[in-house]
Amino acid sequence: MADLKQIEIARLAGVSQATVSRVLKGDPQVNDAMRERVLAVVQELGYVPDARAQSLRSQRTRLLGLVVHRASEALAGDPFFSALIASIIEQAGRYDYHLCVDTARTARSQRAIYEELLRTRRVDGLILVESETHDKRIARLSGEGFPFVLIGRYDPADAVCSVDNDNVGAAFMATDYLIRTGRRRIAYIGGPAGLTVTRDRLQGYKNALESHGVGYDPRLLAFSEFSERSAASAMTDLLSLTPPPDAVVGLDDLIALSAMREAKRHGCRVPDDIAFIGFNDSPLCHYVEPSLTSIAVDIPALARKATEMLIALIEGREPQPKRQIVPARLVKRESA
Image (cartoon, rainbow, N blue to C red; front, side, top):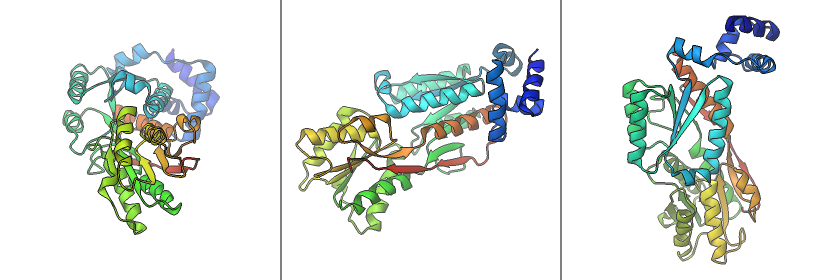
């Protein structure tokens, strides 16, 4: 019956049945326009492949896994992961896959979740986030030959399939903009020091300072957990300096917004006394006073590329290229 339906879809979409099959399996090599045409017909007909029969034939669960190193309550308030998870769910659903999300409060519990996923094979593949320099997850999954795609960077670049924005270039863009608007004592509040994204954005920040002949002051460097309290504490420490910073680049919008609120609590005028730039251009940027300048990271594109690459790996195809970069852009608002 499924074959007859696919024949009808192929006829209405003006493509071959093989193309319909490739679209339904999530083959990223299918032309985008052709994929959209097929999926439009699929939606119009209300065609739903028999997932149970497909699973029995392929011995797949049609589940993708994502493990986030956050407490559940922290994840609920994280605009980046809220947007990323929603985008992965939407993209996976287009290829009849579903997303299984786990949260882990500690590194130890995170490792336990990965071991359980490897043992039970209850997901067909994993999307990894927040890579570290010596990432034990990547070594373990690579050793098992288990399909995974990293949203982030890992050295060497061709060692794993990954999707990322140019974090060095994006942080350069933010810092360069602040310098060009007259700021000279620019602080950087990173995330946890071991994360690749923290190090990459720190490098971009340093590169921009150097390109303008602005000396790097290590006292203007702070690290924060992904929480309002931690970012506020980092900002308090920076404000205790003499003289204090006149601008802050925050690793993400949550950190930048928490720091900005703390600066205002200490009597600082934004942006007159101190300017702020975040990352991710989350909806929160519009709803604060002053509105937050941010580097827009194309989260739907990150999710789409990562999901398509992972499905290709699951189905035995090697994605090319193995590392894909999604552009970022500066969105200027009142805080800078």
